[in-house]
Amino acid sequence: MKKDINFPQVENVHIAITQKLNEESQELEWEVYVINRNPFPIRNLLITSKGYGHKEDGEKLATSTLRHHFDDLGANEYALIEPIDPALFQLANEFWLSYYIDTEIFDKKFVFVPGSIMEENLVFIPQLQLKGVMHS
Image (cartoon, rainbow, N blue to C red; front, side, top):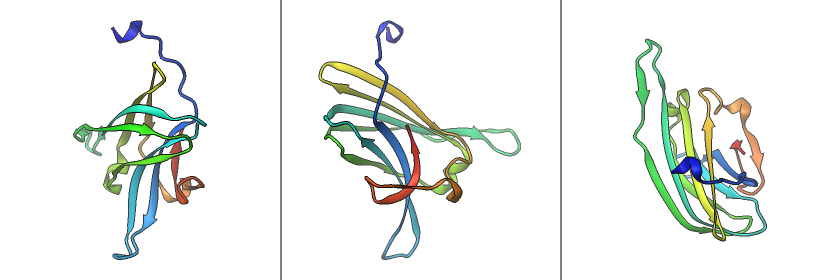
């Protein structure tokens, strides 16, 4: 059972939601990345993403769950997980990441709370050369 597995603490692996200008359309696009800031690779990454919350009238709202897999993510590398629609920023956006270092499994849930992905919270992320909101 999962409760019987010892999951070590995730360090130097982040999820970032970034903003960039599409040169062709001149519109802002938002994308989600996984960033490995470790000096060693991580492998067999599994990432699930979903959004959930409530409408103003209290009705529950949820997106479908998307699943992504990456064989390897090298030392100090990043990978695009998916584009994200700004209409989802009113929801909690959850990214559940599992990966291996050698034979040890690591697991962490990253949740961007409603309202956290906004212009005022953007910071420059040097590894991506983009502005975004980074969760660690």
